[in-house]
Length: 334
Ligand code: PHE
Image (tube, rainbow, N blue to C red):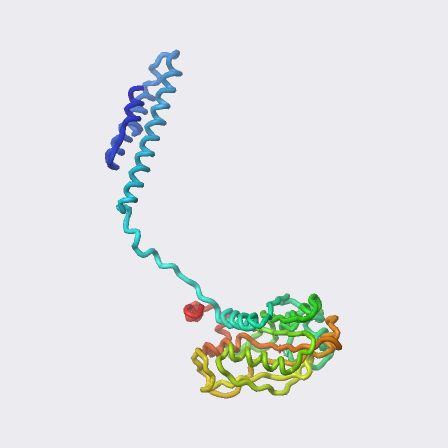
């Protein structure tokens, strides 16, 4: 008992004092252990009382050490003896965004400012959504425009060749007015080279409402290219797609007049960046939209090619090699 009051009254100012105290009571050769050793010499009728007393002493001594240490630590913290808290910490390694994501996010940003939302769909598609609904029935020669990967056991299932399939799904599920862009990965059975790959990325856009005209399409594209590339000239060349009529190909003039903050490594001239057109009435019908009431336009572009252009990348394969030396170059482009 007298030891317990000694324990309770003990106080210490330094680590060393606390340690001496700890050894005296709770150390291997400390008082608590001494008492435990003496336990067997105690008369049976006193064992219970004696046992309780040493336990109380043991707990009290341990509690004391703990609380003294805590007290000392918080004092040290206040005094700043805890080390220099203003010292710089370990460097944090930051990742970088992939150039495909950078360009994709920029395109999404530009179109969301004029009311387009983002829609996505499956990469493994059925024939209807990738071809038939888009005015490309079986045996239509234009199916050859996009060399397709089929799933061997089922000719109805394929890897989508464009994200126009998402637009079909969107029209089936939503009523006009529709303003949506569909970014995503697409697949074509093409030989892999510096200029083309068997998969790449697209953003396709769709706008359907009453009285949508070709002038709306052209103005939308001009807005987009200006936002994307800086002050820029575009031209539309007549073209053919089964799902649009009329159809056009869009070229951007890549030259000294193009005020862009990117370093161009290519020369000057007209560069094709996308396909577009007025949605064919047959496509609207296939998606349960009345072509007498509604009209619309669609466009589609490849993200990879734009990324190559903007960042001066010479080989499309670099985009999917995951070489850290390549990827790290986009750190500042967050
Ligand atoms: N789907 C076409 C392609 O992948 C692009 C396109 C979309 C053209 C919409 C016209 C209208 O080549």
